[in-house]
Image 1 (cartoon, helix red, strand yellow):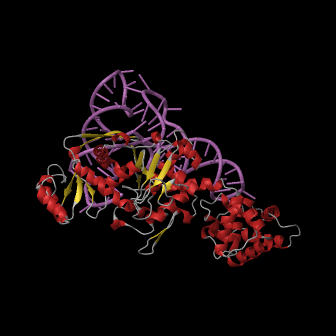
Image 2 (spheres, rainbow, N blue to C red; image 1 turned 90 degrees about the horizontal axis):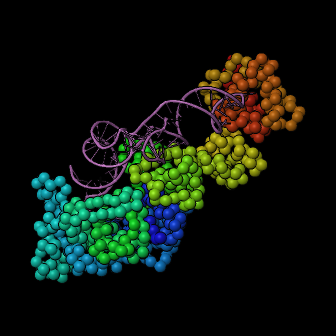
Image 3 (cartoon, rainbow, N blue to C red; image 1 turned 180 degrees about the vertical axis):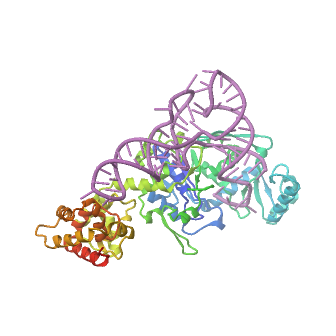
Length: 507
RNA sequence: GGCCCGUUCGUCUAGGGGUUAGGACAUCAGAUUUUCAUUCUGGUAACAGGGGUUCGAUUCCCCUACGGGCUACCA
């Protein structure tokens, strides 16, 4: 099996593209074979610097590696269509000579005029086809000596496919089954442009043939042009080795209608690309999941389950398990909404399955960035305390902020609810107890003393606990409080209690 | 507009001629945690509509509606 991922370097890789690459990767790793990265840069006007590198890096972050491609080389290179430019002309010529294609000299203006005239006379979809081409300027409608003259004088031309009339094209799709299209619905697509480059249609057929691709797995947006591709294989006489087709369902917006677009990320304040993209023209940065602190395993797991399912109730899949379980038979036909909340959940699952040891390094990096210092032994104890409260590793900072910074303010709803009655008295009592403590400071003793102080005022500890948290962290919620206090140290806790007692109203 | 593809809880989906239509996320409630979170238990919630075929259709067929894609010398 040989499959390819063939993006166009027109910008950062869309999540739908990542998923297409992923499905190609999973299938070829399962079946055995090669995955090829081919860059389809036949439109020179849309080239964006850095896009190619971005695509490779994003996929690499996801764990998707190629066997052949622009960055790897291989026996079927070059893998960049602009570098294959010279070889396409002969294939286009071959079709002209065999009568499957023809030269067309129409200018952009003439084409516009033709479409407008058709529209004006009520034709639903104006096409360059068997009906209209006789009225246009091409090698089928013009006298042969004029065609020769135009070609000799170097007049710009394109090569169009001569769409046959009255035929039915049958496409066998691995995901959708049989798709039948009438050639009357198809037009004479340009195969070879006046700038000397092929269009996608010619290039992908020629390259898939030359690179011996066996399975074309691509987005659903290519389904309508697949009959043309089949006709091209036929015209070349390559039907025997034509690859199998599989058209993947699209990724849809998280809410509302339509297909997923980069604006959806902006709108919801979430990353959109796998890795950060810097627009080379404006310098504007688009956030990526990598930089936002997501695990690539979580992102891949999430993406894999959009449009595919294993057929049982499993949800958590490592890459190897995905490879094992994957198959085109279980790919859905319908589009899937790109639901960010499920990604959060996946990331949380992967985070929780991490060992404390493996989180030491990233958490410690986050602390360094923040300028907060901490002994390894304390960090090791602090991580499990807050881990369950995190979705991303980067959440660590907000979870431990109050460990490093004394409260600047106190959560008002808790102040209103808990700061009153006997609480100030308990607090005074507790401060004295903590200060005069002779035993070693620990969570257990801190808790015991708190309970005693509460008892002396005839109050239940539970009713006062949130007030204590408020006094010591300023916050309404957080990790196990007495463990936290134990790590924070006695004198720091006492100082914070005093500060709270003097800042907040006494009664 | 034309052509093509699609349509099961809010979301991702399983299922498939006779099922209490299953799971997960989200959401809600209860329990545990002396607080919040975690965890556990439970709940709300779906076969787009109309015709066929059939003893029986959510499942098969047709139509309609809705959604999506394509309709460039873009991929």
